[in-house]
Image (cartoon, rainbow, N blue to C red):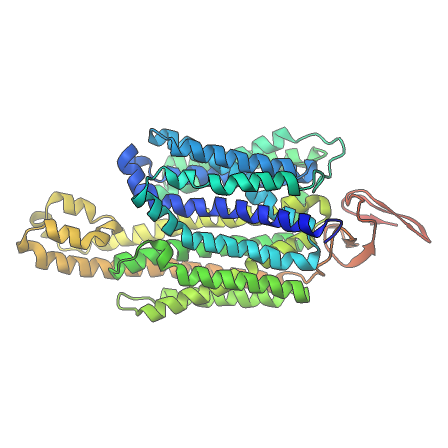
Amino acid sequence: MPNVERKVAIGALITVLMAVFMSSMDQTVVGTAMPRIIDDLGGMSLYAWVFTAYMLSSTIFVPIFGKLSDMFGRKYFYMVGIAIFMGASWSAGLSQSIYWLIGSRTIQGIGAAMTMAIGPAIIGDIFTARERGKFQGLLGAVFGVSSVIGPFIGGFLTDKISWHWVFYVNMPIGIPALIMAYFFLPKTLGKNAIGEKIDYLGATLLGGMLLSLLLGLSFASQNHTWNEPQVWGLFIVSAILFVFFYFTERRVKEPILELSLFRNEVFTVGNIMNFIIGFSLFAAAVYLPLFVQAVQGKSATNSGLILMPMMLAAVLMSIGGGLYISKTGKYKLAFIIGTIATTYGLYRMSQFAVNSSSWDISMAMIITGLGVGLPMGMLMVVMQSAVSKRYIGLALSSVQFFRSVGGTVGTAVLGTIVNNSFASQLNGLPKILNFILPKQFLTMMKSPQFLMNKSKILEKSPLSVHAILTGVFANMSKWLSTSITDAFTISMFASLGAIMAAIMIKRIPIEDKSAKIVLESSSDGLGIKNATSLKSNLHDSTFETDSQDGKSEFKGESYKK
């Protein structure tokens, strides 16, 4: 561990793991409690915004706080992030209306963005290059475990105490994490700024661009159409802001997003692969529970139980991948194997039918989980070795950012496909049903939720229509099955792009940035070919090294001797 005592490093690691556990568990805990929350607060039409508000703020601010922590250090940004998350959690627990809750969730997302962006960078700063792999893999494992146990904790708190406690439960985790951050995180950790000014204009344009894009995608997902004026209007606004953002970042001294990083092939190709993984993971995480419960009519305590085989496989492989890269320093073959496994798992899912066995479904989930989990922790380590020290926070936050955006795009694209496909097949129902079934049933039939309430609907229906409803349920199950497997097929083809990215990504040495600077003599200036040993406390953007030939200088994008 470079320049850090063992007990300090372990304390910092525990701090990061606690904060990651708190923020990642929050999503699944809240999801379980939402039906009860809506019963108390009302606002069913705003149901999705409890999640969308959190997603928007956390995704938008991740790259911004990643950059700021590169400039001014990790410690206090991280502590503020934990404090904001806890304060917003407390406020959400006190909510008296759905608007209050949505506002609290928006602020919660800002706190989550700070912890998600800075946490992996803290591990990267404190541990050596070879140690990072196993600890970044451990981060992925914590995320997976929290995703599995979160729904159980949320269900228990909601049923036994109150839904308010799904937010208050963050306090016993966050307070110790905040105290440990104060004592164990060095003040100068990650600090690279020497009198630079914050790029306020760039941050504002980036935030506006991402907000417009993500809002457009969210509206497309919720309305199941891309033809709404508000959707295209937001996309146009996002495109205009991108143009302004691009030219602004080219001329400022310390841009909020270093555009030259995209000339680094490892950074760019790695994030393309990461984006596709986020896109594909969405299909499995969202539509597998719907398939099992709505199509096959099986009950589950919650979606976490249904997804447990996939999540546990992802956890184990995330740890295994981290240990592998720590021991060997290699990653490319693992990326290729992981993306192939993900694609094959999605292919198996695309073959699901109403009568698919639990074994087939579990095997498909396990294969997909193994494939997705393998590159998760490893990609963090590769990104850190691919860029210079002063961009580590930005590079690692980009992993979170592109995976989140991939999931958001998946929400819009696959949600539209499933709902439109299902709606079009509903036209095949006999027209006589319009005269036989109650109007409330005819309205409910437009949603897949209709299939998840078979027993309740039959209980409330006259015996004379039971036979008709049974036939309707059977047809709708087949149609919904086809719609969901269409989404899996699209995800499978998208995953082929991840395989191509894994094949294209360059092999680079996994080096310790605190002891070495790795340079490339080509024009991108951020890649890796030739290693030059340097003093560990020098900045990467401008440095000098003594040699027999004189001085060597590195000026951002070129190497001159």
